[in-house]
Image (cartoon, rainbow over all chains, first blue to last red; front, side, top):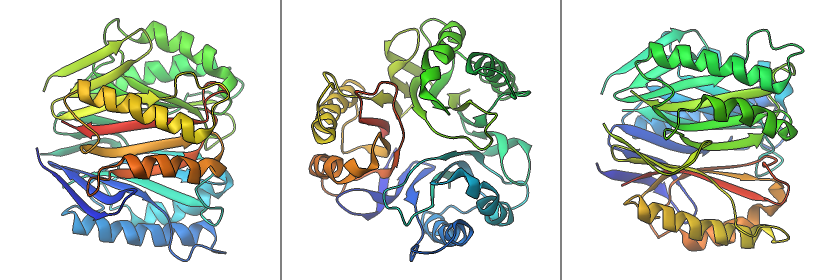
Amino acid sequence: MTIERKHTRDRMSQIVIHGDTVYLAGQVAMDAAGQPAGAQMRNILEIIDGLLDEAGSGNAKILSATIWLSDIRDFDAINEAWDAWIPQGHAPARACVEAKLAMTKYTVEVGIIAAR
Amino acid sequence: MTIERKHTRDRMSQIVIHGDTVYLAGQVAMDAAGQPAGAQMRNILEIIDGLLDEAGSGNAKILSATIWLSDIRDFDAINEAWDAWIPQGHAPARACVEAKLAMTKYTVEVGIIAAR
Amino acid sequence: MTIERKHTRDRMSQIVIHGDTVYLAGQVAMDAAGQPAGAQMRNILEIIDGLLDEAGSGNAKILSATIWLSDIRDFDAINEAWDAWIPQGHAPARACVEAKLAMTKYTVEVGIIAAR
């Protein structure tokens, strides 16, 4: 099976495609500083839409999502954005846990495995 | 490759099957309140047995497991349940780390990728 | 698709191969006690090289990596080792978050999904 990588730098690729399976790097918000978790999540989901589209996938084809929150008390805020974004009948397997992220301005990070 | 989802709600599916690979949502215990980590783990493993069975998989076909503990000091307690549950010769790749979970009553959460 | 397991004990296998996909157990450093995060990371990457080689894979075929740091302030130290190790043009999808690990002597743990 072929491996295809997109947006590849020294540290990571934003997209890695292995056969019919797509792995995205953990996504964080752009312009995150000062943005509350709900706003960061909406931005992340827009970024994921773009990456999945580029990979020949889409948000109806997500297999598994891992969500890391720097403060688990943001659980409801990020879920509001998440639940509205997932196409009905196509929700992935998901886990959401608390973890400090690479920079303190990031309050949410989302990892995705999808099909294409 | 086909995608099949089971127990699908707005937020997540408990089971997602992509070809021969099965992704389960992060599993937590039922009636978790006041239960110690070992008891929660035993309950989670029963739930996973049911989900894997439904997916045409089983605990001898787990590929990778991620275990999150709200207190890493429960490591030995959950391992006792885990080690007894894994069929000999069929242990998956595994990582176990500490993370606060969505509700404080949950002390253990388990994510599974399996074959079928 | 076949499942092949290597270095299998009661709790986990260090390598699980499912068709063309390889899952490694979360890797930690040997002789970790007292070693700073950068040194632990270099040791982990050597261990991963050996495991991937054994699986018919290699560090140019990593699909996704999850890095857990017991102290996120070690981010730069582990990245120095990581960035030097990744073959140019072959960087995987990656997420790096903070999490306490099974033993306090471990400051870094790395989970890998690779192709072969």
